[in-house]
Amino acid sequence: MLELDLAQASDGTVVLMHDATVDRTTDGHGTVAALSGPAIRALHLRRSGGIAEARVPDFQSVLQWAARTPTALLMLDIKAVPPDTVMTMVRQAGLDDRVLLLTFSEKISRAAFAVSDRALVSCLATSTDAVRRARTMAGDRCFAAYVPRGAQPDLFQAAHDSGAVVVTDLLGRTAIDDAVSPPAGAAFVRRLPIDIIVTNTPLALRAALRTT
Image (cartoon, rainbow, N blue to C red; front, side, top):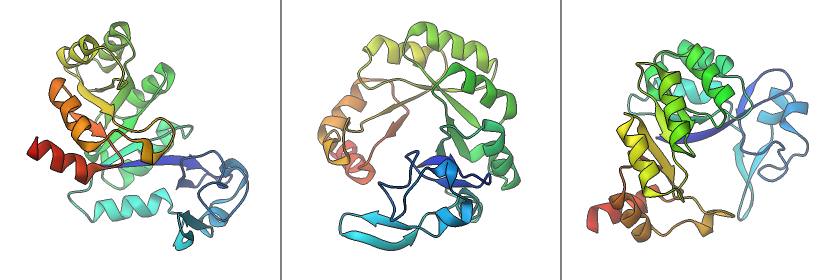
């Protein structure tokens, strides 16, 4: 599954961008919200060795690619983009049942459930009460519970017992190279009822899970 961060340009175009500004990851400057879609798509991406040839992808292009790629599954961190905007685009691409919407507030979670009856909605689960509220919001639908990595094991178990798809991450707190090592991550995953792991090292983690 590919995890994508979404942002919305001044003209409503949805692009792939983690930050509120384009400064860190591109050769441009300014906030995403103040720039037009064409202006953002014209920017070149930064990499460790300098500026890359690749440009900023727009969400529509990714959806078109995913529609042509039957194995593609998308985890969408919608951030400040309204859920109905995202799901309208997803629905038009015929990908309702191949996306997971990451939401990190109950307000956005409710809005996501309201506009999608097939996409998997992930709710932030920081307590057993939050798990119960998410279960209530979902009704008889399947939902995902994003349990923080540092949570106690009983919270992971409570999310699992509620019928949720349990999601957590092995990401570093400050940088990609601060991520949990694959062997340690594999040991962590084996101890808990986890269904989906968000990681910067998916191939290494998969190899560690197969060998440890």
